[in-house]
Length: 258
Ligand code: APR
Image (cartoon, rainbow, N blue to C red; front, top):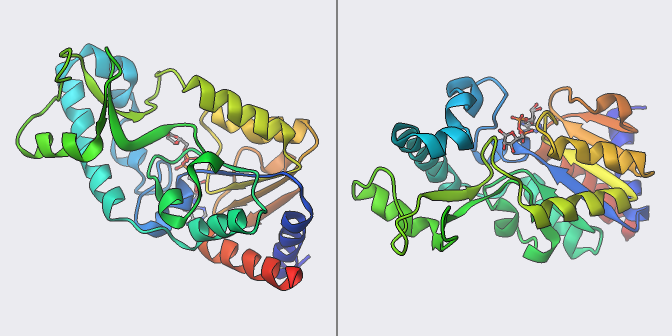
């Protein structure tokens, strides 16, 4: 089957499915100028993930300083990033009533800039948009902490209790957000159509979601530039860039629907 035929098949599945779950990774945002993690030039090809674990963050002031330095670099990219065609396509799916939910491993908030509603989005690895105190759970807007860092603070602490502040993202070794994780697995198990876009599917437990969907009878489509760990169990594997691919799929969806 030609590449265009495959895109038409995905569009037909989206139109025919009563419960479509889209599951995305950092590959969705590279066309918005935000590097992913494991492609050439990705974050973990430039920094050692071992230095950015939750345990290291808790254990050493130096590790916290490095964590915030990297965090500021990534946040500057995210702040100026715009949603790309792939984000806009997923927002259009919601507007057309064709999206049960979006489970994102991304922490950049671009889905909301694209128009997805918060109640339809599960941020399973958290978000850079706010900061939490690890002791009293007080919540700060990210820009407030960024201003303190720009003014010279290296390792911000909580104004109320003096506890350590950390962006509301999930670091390696940090517990996953319980409610979001449980909800993501519940929705994956109930999905009729499960579409993975822009993830290498190597980080667990998130990478288990397509397997759970498939095990429970979902049609599994994977759209990715490179091979993923779930290609062998997928019903459709489409090798391509997220933006142009999702744009073409939504063109077919609009044509078939009218
Ligand atoms: N279009 C399609 N696929 C792309 C594009 C693109 N424009 N750019 C990159 N990709 C693909 C790459 O081929 C790769 O397989 O996206 C995937 C990105 O994989 P990773 O960098 O491993 O990112 P991700 O799967 O989201 O990582 C999961 O790892 O470090 C943790 O918490 C972090 O959420 C992240 C998790």
